[in-house]
Image (cartoon, rainbow, N blue to C red; front, side, top):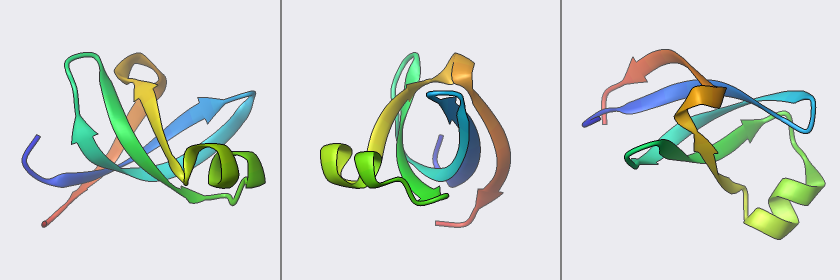
Length: 63
């Protein structure tokens, strides 16, 4: 993936939106944008590795 992409994913029964910072073989490193979650912000610095199976690609953005 050469362009940044917006995705939505579920974590702990809640949906989140973010953009893909890095793509791995079976997962993405995602910068979580919304909604704000204190645990993600403090524990994970606003970034999470999420399985591609749990992500839905929304749109691509020019980098």
